[in-house]
Image (cartoon, each protein chain N blue to C red):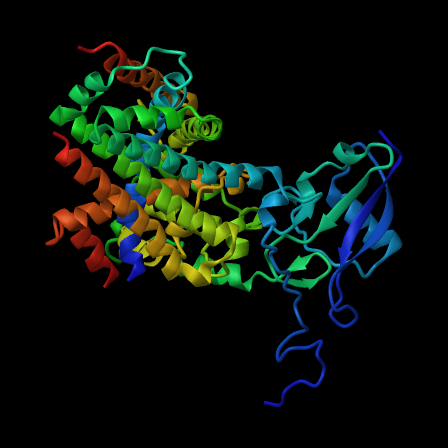
Amino acid sequence: MRESNEAPLWLLFSAGGVVAAFLIPVHLFLFGLAFPLGWLGAPSYEHLLALVRLPLVRIYLFVLCSLPLFHWAHRFRYTLYDGLKVKHLNEVIFVLCYGGATVGTVLAAYMLWSIK
Amino acid sequence: MADTIILEIARYSPERDAEPGFQRFEVPVHKEWVILDALNHVKDKIDGSLTYRWSCRMGICGSCGIMVNGEPKLSCATFLSSYAHNGNVVRVEPLRYFPIVRDLVTELSDFLGKLKKVKPWLIPKEELSLSDGEFLQTPEQLEDYKQFSMCINCTLCYAACPVVGLDPKFVGPAAIALAQRYNKDSRDRGTQERTAILAHPDGIWGCTFVGECTRVCPKHVDPAGAIQQYKIKAALDWVKGLLMPWGDKKREEDRNAAA
Amino acid sequence: MQQPKSPLYTEYHPRWYRPRVSVYWWLGQSQYLKFILRELSSVFVAIAVVMTLLQLRALRGGPEAYARFQHQLQTPLVITVSVISLFFVVFHTITWFNLTPRAMTVRLRGKRIPEWLIAAPNYAAWVVVSGAVSWLVLRWH
């Protein structure tokens, strides 16, 4: 059964890797360092809310949150297999990794859908 | 450059030892000597029981793979002088991740079984006879697979790949690269057959692109590149299979060829 | 077939020695360590996503909730996590762009395009995209 699962999981991993490579650094830099540390003037609450309300931005943020989580899930699963030699726990690891990514995706979808 | 160098060579004799140990040999350093020359010197002049594989002594037969200071190398292609600094000890061990038969000789039957599993031969669309004439292939078609055809089955890549060590069922870099060599050959129609075997957690999906295999390959085959290309192809084939479950003409041909 | 009496011999051949791979295999070589660090960068990518999700939640919660979240982002612990995460997500970007050319052979007029020429447009696009996102966040009205 697992053989037919691996191709789409690898595709998700690749897509997530591309999204993470292009977009995560700038988001983390701005919102995690530049604004909190005052290097750049932080945008106002109203400005950000107006941005997030736009349908395109909602879709963008959904992709930004969802795909990199699946990238992490796939990569971390294999790191646990190889790094810690815990392949015998592979069902548990599988569920924790992809389940976690799914939870994050659902949360992102819910929040972005329901923002007023 | 020093006059002599100390080789610390792994010794294991199943009749005598429970596990491998090391033995030191002092060997003269000549400018043109490779590790194989040093091993031959030890066997000739010091200890005739030293056991190791070698054949062509020019890097094409793939027999003489060993670990030199923790790096997979061909003993016939590694110069002694690069290690000959004063007081240097060179550690010589059998290739990693393989069972050891004796001294520096590894057991390769598992690797050979994996190689055979991927069907590394031309699987033509239909059996042809000599009177049908030759296959024609342009230089561009040759370029598509030529790099992967350079593999000499030396298994240095297996000694470099941590997944090979961690998962005994993993098919391994050389086998997948050789499968890709035939997949990309314009004369071959066996891609479906090979992919059915390799699109599997023990096949291409087990590879995590560490990249060590490509780094140590003495013939610049780039097995890591071959495997990643194969992953993309297998993933796109999966998408095609999803969007066109009734199959398309090319896959139909390949499947009929496999039957 | 009788079981061989000697522990040194199996049924058909002398006992081969099978070395065990230690669970610390990845510490044995610098290339292995770099590989594991590259893989672990995915954890920090996930951390960055979690921070974004928390930010979204704060945004939905109203101006006071968002202000509280901003303060939490400024604590030394969170700043430390952000700095380390930034290092690792940039590490992910660089290793990803450098590895992408290996997965695809592009031929132009019969000659293979060199790897840096495939990686370079990725870096350029990264700069452009980062700039566009920054502009949207900072300047767009």
